[in-house]
Length: 293
Image (cartoon, rainbow, N blue to C red; front, top):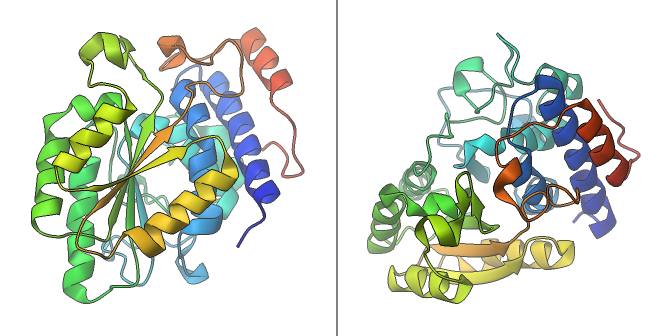
């Protein structure tokens, strides 16, 4: 297992990568990316079982991923974070982050397997679809006898307004797809305002009741306490799953985490900082031994 300090370092560097990528492209989604950095750092650098030979390997014919844990980013606009974590984990060169959103680059605004980027298994960002993909892949693992591995999928709390999420949730519970683990990034914000103002689905307690009513095991998590994140994700992977019910983790996060003028507001959901704002943001984000790309 990775040390907590190591995971915090990865998350800190990812936040620097996010700001630099989005500012350089003058386009992108920094808010949610900054908020979910701790969770993805823990997943990729500690929790998921990924054989070394599968890293940096793109296999369009092997999308079911037998023999390894899988992750799907349903809220694909968090691509700056996703790319940073994949690159820092060794899936592709870190220098490639500098090509974010450039024409012809593999690191496009939303992830796509069409660019044959290792670690990306499905096009995402059309909100509401990721849980269906993850449930299907988890069911495929069951059918092929890969009972030792799990399928993780991250969704936004605003994304839960999509009806397809709940169709997939019903199916997973009805078919006993207990090797899928959903993670809801609960930052309370979406592109048009707060989730409560746009289409309020209730507080964390009410969201828990909704998922439980759909037949899921529900776990709460502090999305910025690395020890709690690691403990919760390992518990979900090794203890909570595999008992006949799918699992969902409600991760409490702050949009724009780490940058004071971005934190807790939807204003930076899909807005790039200018050069001056990026300089201010980077001054607030600690440098790490991993180094900027």
